[in-house]
Amino acid sequence: MVRRTKEQAEATREQLLDAAEALFCNTGVASTTLDLIARAAGVTRGAVYWHFKNKAEIFEAVCDRATSPMGTMLDTLANDPGDDPLGALERQAGDILILVATDARIRSVLEILFRGFDGGPEFAEYLAREEQNKRQCRCQIQSILEVAVARNQLPPHVKPADAAVAVTAFVGGLMHDWVIDQDYDLANMARWLTKIFFNGLRHG
Image (cartoon, rainbow, N blue to C red; front, top):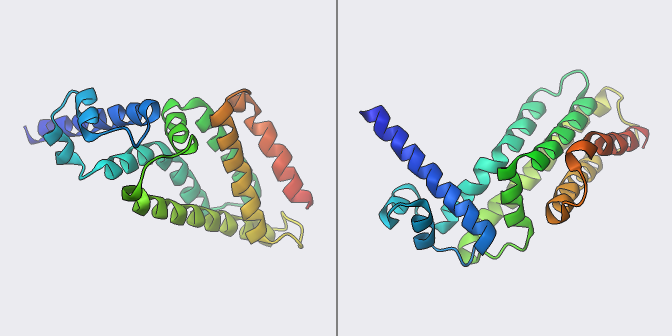
């Protein structure tokens, strides 16, 4: 019985997140209310408060379940860059771009974030954490590139910190460009695009 209750609670939570994601994407974050989320999910407002304290917490959960796979991928590589750190980073950059192009949930959340986020003051804490996460991501990439320098995979004059800025701008820029326009086949072009970029890094 306890297990069933736990499973039911998790199912309700997912219903709420699905409903919120669709509303955030179609209606906008500012125009989406807790009442709208509850009605779209087919639950009471009390059920919303059972799982989340406010709209900002729901928004964060919606974003996290879409973007956490990408964060996990980078965490794994940063912890163990392996014998070919630059090659591994190139493959992972391609993997992330393909994931963005083929995963509807990730694409939906990125659309919410990229098409003019219209939250408000209640989202200030979340946005500050996101800025911190971006800095951490760049630091992780820098640590991978430092190993690449140690293995002579980058020219001596290339600074890992500068290269990390370039990598994050390259991947983030492509994600933003494709999510906004979707006028080219990112899934099929991802490997070729990353190859061109990382060949440029390798030859300085």
